[in-house]
Length: 126
Image 1 (cartoon, rainbow, N blue to C red):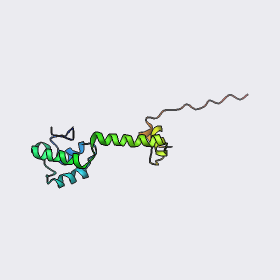
Image 2 (cartoon, helix red, strand yellow; image 1 turned 45 degrees about the horizontal axis):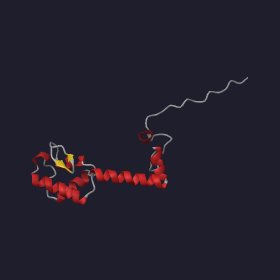
Image 3 (cartoon, rainbow, N blue to C red; image 1 turned 45 degrees about the vertical axis):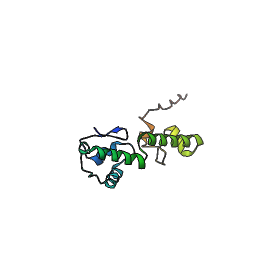
Image 4 (spheres, helix red, strand yellow; image 1 turned 90 degrees about the vertical axis):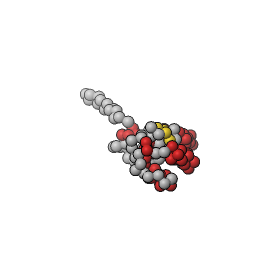
């Protein structure tokens, strides 16, 4: 398995798909990088030469923020929102949708599994 940016990428897939296993690189960016380095995007990752792999790794490291540093940067941005007490920060703290989605229905991804709340029992009249 070839290793780029500290990640083992799948060897049996086309290189433009294999690069998407690196956090911060999607298909469009992957194709753009390969076009910039004149590497055929349909070439399998296992068929790349060592010099192509090293050029790919160096180019990604020089021009893009990926993997650990990107994750750290995102976490710091969210922590900043929480610390300054912004609306978005409060939504992050409460585990609710941050970007204006409705919450009376849906929002299960952020809110988690449904928890049934028992209704109030009425006191008998008499």
